[in-house]
Length: 178
Image 1 (cartoon, rainbow, N blue to C red):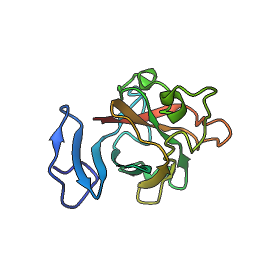
Image 2: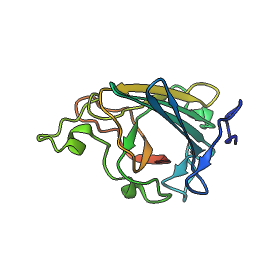
Image 3: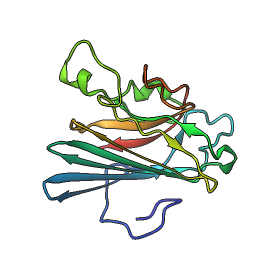
């Protein structure tokens, strides 16, 4: 299965829903999850830079933590050079429903720790800068497992503020469900 904007061979994919493709493999003690889909626009009433974009996310879960790799293609090249925040969120990806994505996936919150620390060490931050071809790539390595569930990667209007974890308005999302 190949998604818009991506080339190359595809793994054996198992569809969890009509629009989300997932592949799971085990590699040297790690679980590898791959997701690919078109980005869902949070504002379908007006044009935006992610209207024709698609994303691929790979999560590699090891005993020592999780590595996330995000590739976004088909972004409007007029925003080349701009950096967008992107984070793993707790809730689903719902077109025209940015609130459904909930808050950022936070390891402290999931472990019941208080106070909850907001940082790149407790959350999966995947900010990317758009290149001239309309592509953006990012990766993050964290020292915690990402628990399965109905989640999403949300693209925000601004880069992530390292002091607060905030990144502006929610523009689009891609489903991450396993």
